[in-house]
Amino acid sequence: MEALSKSKKSLLLRLSPNVRRAWNHRETEMRLKSRIIFDYELLYLEKGGLTLRIDDTVHMISQGEIVLFKPGKEHEFIESIGECWMPHIHFDAMNEDDFEEVPINYKKRSECSGEELRWIREDVLGDSLQIPDVIRIENHGEILKALQQLIHAYERRDLDYYILQKSLVLKLLYLIVKGLESSDANRLSVHHKSLDAVATLIMERFDQTLLLEELSKTATLSVFHFSRLFKQKYGLTPHQFQMRYRIEKAKDLMIYSPLSVSSVAEKVGYGSVYAFSKAFKQIEGISPRKFIQTFTGSEER
Image (tube, rainbow, N blue to C red):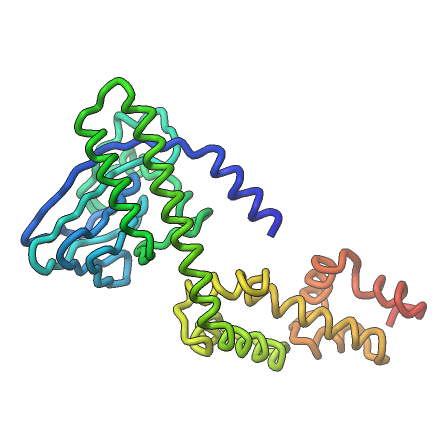
């Protein structure tokens, strides 16, 4: 948790957005062939409906929903419903020396040259801030207002624009993060019992390999939202939760049973003494055998 917090803080301090293009796009038949982009594109659907594909997932986008197209992720606009109003921006999240040289791309990854592929930015917003591709949040009206203000500033581009555009993109990101946190809090309340059921399942089957997909189905959530909400509730990922529970069970066995370390490792679900010892030391700071000597006073088993 602490390492993640430091990582996020470091990123937030380094954010320095630059807007490549901003405009109010209106289209009655919106289609766009498969492509990647080098930067970010933030699109707000003000009116109409869209069917999009991002990587292998098809999304139905409705009015008031937001899409964050990320660097290097293949996407296409499959079809639209009615007239679509789509205020959107292309931007870099971090200040880049080659910002003015990088164009908006309309080609597939396989069609890009080596030099073009080097323009693909690091996805700090997805990897570090965990902003999803499709954003459904209650405060989307505030985002539309800030987005329109940014588009108007881009069209004018007066002397204050370069400061204003950075502040407005940061405001957009802030509103998105706060909106996602609020949505997570609401989901956490709604899914409290199902998350507890998953935790119970992990504890009952601590010696087995449990796939994330299986656990998310138990909670009746998508893998993304399940992982996010589970960590928010318990402070650990499902894997970390199981590993800590396994080590607690192992400690009980080492203190209150005559089992060897290899037998304890097998009992708590590890395929080898090496893997068990590595996990045990990672959590407890000492080896299993050192734990036995320290807490029981007995010799190595």
